[in-house]
Length: 490
Length: 125
Image (cartoon, rainbow over all chains, first blue to last red):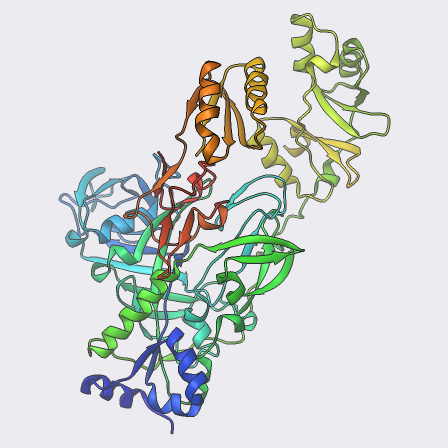
């Protein structure tokens, strides 16, 4: 027999509501079946706790005397967005501090705010007749603010991908540190505890749904950005009163060489209105499938290496092409469980009630790529023939080629055009100054290369990161087929 | 246990390797780095041979250091798992309640985890 929201809320008031977590629901449905579970269980609680970059908070400081119209605002040296009224701002979690950029960011500011620490507010203004103050430098805590509203455009992904790196170098990503040659794997999300996984048709989670957010009460404002319901990657737009929240569930994080973010705790109650919802909330980790993606390829469509489910991911090891790869999560399963249990206690204690959504989330929208008006250029579009020498030739020959071909880079190859090294005009100058005559004395053997099908911008970044001005281009057989220099990229 | 030897030049390096080879011990070189203090070698040697090797290296005027392991600050740690998949010896692991634990005994001081922690909760000892 179907239940209604008001029946469930009446039970909460009476103190006889039956609440279980999404993990506990699995066994109940397995043992007793959907029908009995639907009758006996009133609410299933979910939880997730992971880095959610699309998060931030609106703050209102109140007016200074004389008044200031803040043009630029820094909170603990983190630049906040100021395009609203005079003393409102939005602090985004991924914004890096001007000082200590990779160690402190917007996420840390929010954690410090909810920890009730003192925050430095620095602001500047172009001044107006009504707002004459030019600069402000003061300190405040969250209790001094009129409003502090956590407002996260994209949280609580239904599920996420698992990231690996197939290249021969360690890469640092928003999916953490990924070792070369599929050395490890990272995933995110809490699997069967994930809120949207337990309501995959968005029957009960919608606009206005009351939720657990950061240890306080929050609400679903609607679909999150990049909401992708058709592929099972739904997202939520969330808000809540930051003043009620707890630092335990809002943690600033800083990923090495990527930057700051914030781990956000979200818990959503699913009312068991009917048998279908009993079945859906009994979803197991093995029923939630995602993909292992190669983050070594810096493109929008990264290669999919295999399908994988959350049971395999939570086991700590996955198999990729016969190789056993250690896998771990960027989300905390410990905290996901803790959130589901805390929400369960709130409902049992009669301090949290459920409400039907004012409107359901869309189920048919698509998530599209960025429209770019300029054509993507590849290395092959910008390459030029490499000026080459064999490794046994004299430095004088190299010097002559530099003049003849008006180039700064001579690629050293063997008879079959396999790459051996690179010599620059500076190397030759150095050789002459230091009286060296063999290429072997000046050659750089550890050569950073490019491939034909890489976007030119990726090659440009590689040059910049390595502080060099040219990359020999090699084919799959590692033979030299050209060169790309910073001149072509400008 | 891991002696960390600081070696100044290539002759020192061969001297040390020869010295260890004398004892007919299988060992792994976990890390080979160069820095301002010279060449750094991170060797994985059997527990019962540590004293013997340390003595041999010390006689060769090689600085032997048993440090290089990490500590985890539980107050900063949020029990995610960003470090877990990087640890080659499972010294970083989850207990039954899925809280992150660290085994000093299992840590080999490779320090791969050091820059993986988004909470900066892992520090070199």
